[in-house]
Image (cartoon, rainbow, N blue to C red; front, side, top):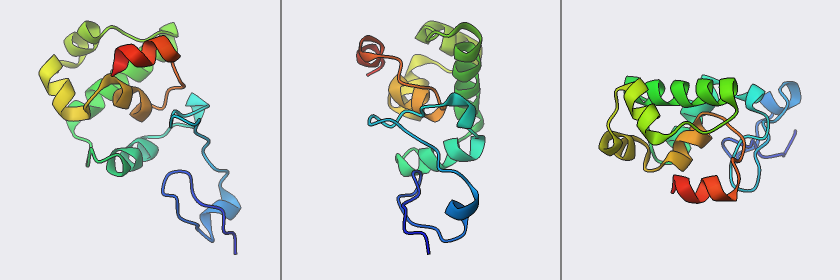
Length: 120
């Protein structure tokens, strides 16, 4: 039996860890390799982080942020996120709590200290 904890659940799994390589996160909880991201991983992280089930509005934001980062390599401004996902700033805060959480759920790497401070 493999007793290595799963990175998304923290619990050991006899079958999955023998066949699937673990997803690696840094010390702040950001995904190290964005190519490892899946929608299933985002859903698990949302539940783990207390956000709960992801709604259509959550997915509009997550997909926009992820796609924009992968296209441009930069954090999109909140105004751009809100305009393109049709979610207001207030709704964004209610849905995720902070931009930091959006970034994590989108499976993106640590954006750096300055950006993290802005995201909170």
